[in-house]
Length: 321
Image 1 (cartoon, helix red, strand yellow):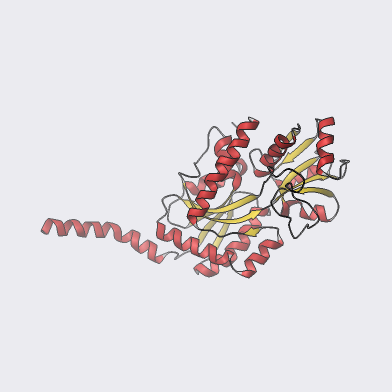
Image 2 (cartoon, rainbow, N blue to C red):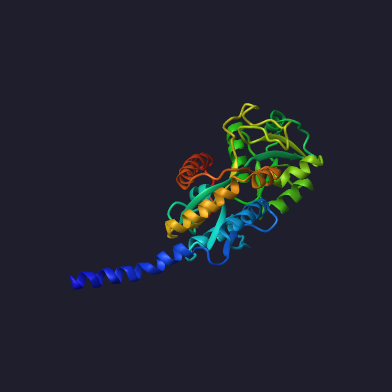
């Protein structure tokens, strides 16, 4: 009996720090990694979300930009961080659902090394052409590409949603285009505006200003429904290409070994923030749709996206070393 009591005391002593840490969370600021340069869509979405989340949690949330390898560098840092809830990140579709089938050497596995907390937003992709491209519709673009197979498209980096969205379009339309990858949205859009490349798929917020000013011509939204900011732009489904569905999305992640009770607190704060009218309105202002689903729902979605984009990648044969 004495030995059993001693054993129970030891177990309680070992467990107590973890219990205390969970109950006390958060008692200091939380680091929120954005795996892309400041000023881009992920950064904007993160700032809208964390401003409200910080209020809910009662602690500051400090955004840290850690870009590299198309977003993988920052996400890998989170996967390897101390699993105490004080390091979390926004992760794009490319990092959680595409690169796992594209790259030979992934620095992490999205389903094995990360706790998938919730989907933050969905962001439609939009297909645009530059002023120097003589087309006004998707059908005209397909015809031009078949007659001039050297048309070049920009992407924000190999393996990202803008890249894969165009590969899916190429596959569906049976056309050939030259891929010109950039290190981010800003240089890609600059070269598109300068006429060095002819077309691009990208998150709507990246291209919205240039479309509204008339510097770029929007041909199609790669989503199931039209968007409020550009109501006259048809969807790919309306134009006879329902297969070309390419909504980008961003999720909230943490290290896989983070205690469930802490993950629950982070999830609760994120979902509460995402469901508030002010956050929804701010996100809608940058053409992002707030989601805030359950962790199992998000994990299931990520798995389905890995499978869906895996089929596209296999069909195109593209790989990143």
